[in-house]
Image (cartoon, rainbow, N blue to C red; front, side, top):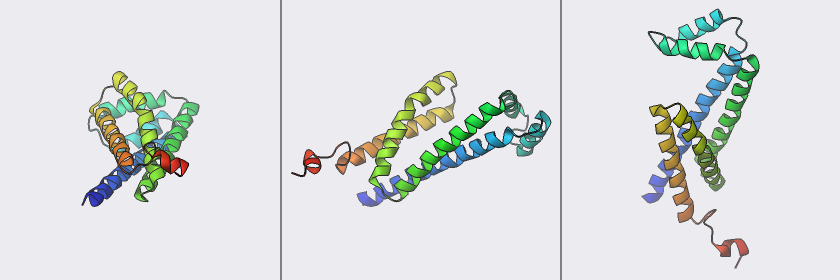
Length: 164
């Protein structure tokens, strides 16, 4: 029973990583595509087509921020998002394949970005950022506990390393 629950949790973590990757791919491709927009009007038309915000407040703010960026900055944002998405894809696929290295990688990557996420939260508070931080901490703690229980890195026995 515990093994089955463990498999479900690992699959949920993998799905979370793959969803984050999909979002980053969309942002990365969008940033690169937007840099090729011919004018603010064509960009405005593209954003209006999304029709997510009926009053346009958030889209107007987003449009103002995006149009103030230079093509080089948009390209850098796009490439950074795509690289970060690649990391999430590797984690997600590795976790789906029940690879121990993917669990270790996920712990290291997740913990390494928590300080940056907290910094961002302090400067731009949103509930979504709070939820992402909480989920990331829970993922890291779960995987560390699992690695310890299975005596994998960094909790391996010295006899496994030395062969005694």
